[in-house]
Amino acid sequence: MIEKVKRIFGMAPKQTGNKLIINCEKLERRVALLENGQLEEYNIERETDRNIVGSIFKGRVKNIEHGLKAMFVDIGFEKNAFLHFWDALPAALDSGIEEVDRPGGDKNKKRITAKDIPNIYPVGSEVLVYVTKGPISTKGPRITTNISLAGRYLVLMPYSPQSGISRKIESPKERDRLRKILKKLDVPENMGVIVRTVGEGQRERYFIRDLSLLLEQWTQIEEAMKQKPAPSCVFREPDLIDRTVRDFLTDEIEAVICDDAAAVKRMTELIGHISRRSSNRVTHYSEPAPIFERFGVQKQIDDAFHRQVWLKCGGYIVIDETEALIAIDVNTGRNKGAKDVERTILQTNLEAVDEIARQLRLRNIGGLIIGDFIDMKSRRDQQMVYARMKERLKRDKAKSHVLPISQLGLMEMTRQRAQESLSGSIYENCPYCKGRGAVKSAMTMSVELQRTLHAVMRKYQDTIHDIKVTINPEVLKRLRTEDEELLVEIERKYAGRLTFRSDPAYHQEQFLIADAANGAELKL
Image 1 (cartoon, rainbow, N blue to C red):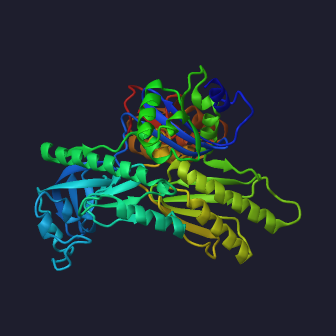
Image 2 (image 1 turned 30 degrees about the horizontal axis):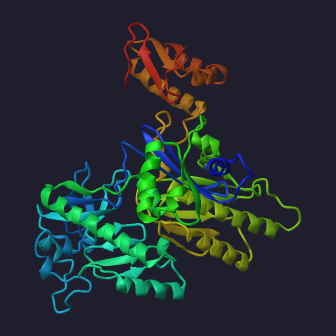
Image 3 (image 1 turned 180 degrees about the vertical axis):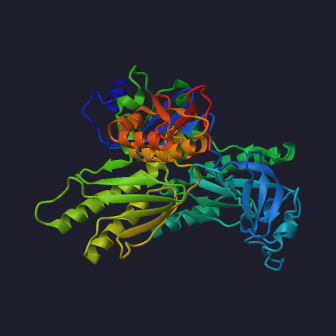
C-alpha cells in the first residue's frame, strides 16, 4: 500500500497514465481528469447550484402556447420548464397510457400529432418529465417525457421498448457481441435499454447487474410518483462524486485520488457494486498541501480560463463568449516560422484545433461556435484541419456538429448546451463595466461633461452662478491637463464659476453637477 501511495503521489519515478483528482470542500466539489499530467476534463458542483440535468420531476402543465407548439410546466422552479409538443410522449401521463401509440406498440392504434397534444395534456394535468437542459440565463429548464435512467453500462428507457447500442462503439464484431447480450437481458415488456460506450468489452454479468440496479431505481421512482404531489422531484440525478464514478471510472483510469475520507468511502462502496477489484484504485489524499496544487491542476485551470490561451508552437487562441455565439480567433503569435510559411500556418491551426476541442470541454461551452482560423491557401490543409477537429470532438460527451472550413476561413460548429457554461456559473458581470469589458475613456467623459455643463449653465444662468462638479480622479486629471481652456470658455460664456472636486469612489463614467451654495444637484 505504501508503494502504491508513493507511485500515485509522485514520490517514485514519474508514471504516465490517467488520474481523477477530486477536491471536496464545504461549498463546492471539483473533479479534474489528468491525462499524462495534462488537464483534459474539469467539472465543478456547488451546494447551492446542483445540476438538475438528468433529474425526473412530477410537474403540472401551467399554460399551452400553440404558436410555439409547446407548453410550460411547473416543476418547482422560479421559471416554468419548456416542453415542446414533440418531446411530449403520452406514455408519461397518469392515465390513458394504454390508449396511445408509442414506438414499438400496436401499429393499429391511432398515431398522435401535434394537434392532439393539448387535448392529451390539458392545463392543470400532471406529467412526469425528464430534464434535458438546465436553466440558462433567463430561460427555464428544457424537459421531455422521454424518461431515461443512466447506469454504469446501460441506460434504461422505461417508456420505450426499443433497445440499442451507442454509436461510438464502432467495431462490428463488438456490436454483434453486445446485441447477443441485449437479447439475453430480462428487460420488462414495453421497456428498452441502450448500451453505453463504456460497456464496450465488458462481460455479460456486468450488464445483468446494472439492469437489476436500474429496475430497482425505477421502482422507487414509481413509488415516489404515487406519493408526492406535483410539482416535486421524484429522482435527483446523482451528485458530482457519484456521476464521476459512473461516467469516468473506466479501465483507462489508473487512479482516483480524493482529499475527503467520507467521499472516498462512498466511492469505494459504489465501485464495489460494479467491480471489487476496481475499488482498489481509489486512494485518500491526506497531505497538507491542497490536492489541486499538489498535482498541478490549479495552475492549469488558471491558465486555461484566460481569454487568450497560448499554444506550444507559440501561437495563441482568443475566446470570446457571448449569450448566443462563441467566437474563437486563431493567431500565429510568436510562431512566425523561418522559411515555409504555409507549414507554420498549418502547424498553428492544427495545434489550435487540439486546444479548442479541449477548451470546449473544460469550459463547458455550448451553442453556436465560430472558429476563425489562419487563412490556408491549400484545400488539402483545410481538410486536414477539419478532419482533426472531427476526430478531437469524438471524445466529447456533449453532442456536436462541425462544418468544413468556409471560403472566409471560418469553421462553424454547434455543441450541445445542457447547462450554464463554467464561466457563466463561476463569474458574474463586473459591477464597474457592467459586463462590457471596457469603460468610457477620460476624453469621452470630458466631452460628455462639457456637453452637460453647457446645458445646465444655460438653464440656470439667471439664478445660479457658482457650480460644483464632483468627478472621478482620472477624468479630472484629463480636464486639468488638456481641457482646462475649454472649461474657462464655458465659464466666460455663461458668466459662471466652476469648481471641481475628485472622488475616488466615483465610477469613471459618473459625475455630479450641483449648486455650490447648498449642494443641491442641478438636473436638466
